[in-house]
Length: 401
Image (tube, rainbow, N blue to C red; front, side):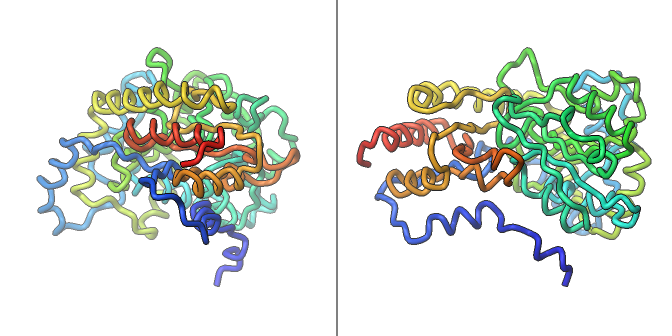
């Protein structure tokens, strides 16, 4: 067996299940706000496209995907991030993937060279999506944690990282908008990261799967391709971005996304994926093409999340240190006590499930940045989110269920 498997930590939701062991919650309707799984209704046109293309079940899909899908993804990138028309070459710079989770993992396996003499590092935000850590470890690299605290706006402080770390770095995971914090790296932050990649010869994997969920319609979050273009790097060298329909279109079960950027890297990654075996079924490609071509449903989806923040924050803010993030659909409050105790007792008292922040973080130089925080995913319907917020308030106030 791969000896690196022994380095993997249990997934957060396995730990959460263990945390709840032995508890019988009160007879209230359970409300789970722990998993970042969108629960809004999938757009009807996506469902219709799937059923209209089921005859394609008789054909093997290709790793490269259809020209229509790659073209739709390229044009969406240009619209969303204000790139010049034709900036993204759909033939060379886009590959479909079976959701960003599998791609974020497999990309490290293709990129990391454990034998290049640098004792490779993979840098990543802390807390983060645990796939980054697992991808690094199973590729034979060592994770390097970029702690994100409130005093840095929950963004990684790249300027404070020693040069010797960057010299060993082969891959940098960025996540903006961030999970679990919702923090956004601005264009200057992203440009600086790209400049570092060129100075020290590493690759950036930019996880931007929350890019279409934000609160200020006049200020959508910046993206790495736009930062590269601002630097005059039209070939997007050393940069690959990851996008998904799971959050944007509320179709996590579709398992559809794409990667885009440096054509030379994607050519090698395409070779890897030929063996990896995760080509998108043709009916998924057809539905995904329509989804990337349509921005109206994404705006409507975004409005649903904005309404939840607007309804929930007045209930919670008087009692806990919490505020609306710029983007994504999470709250990341400081609960003022051990986060695992808070999550366990909230479940026991109110049958509401939230995720301890320490499960998403690791101990860094100042401790675990997730300690005393919980992640609250506003993925349920509005009324259910409001009820959950009221129950959290009752728990904090010590009111019996």
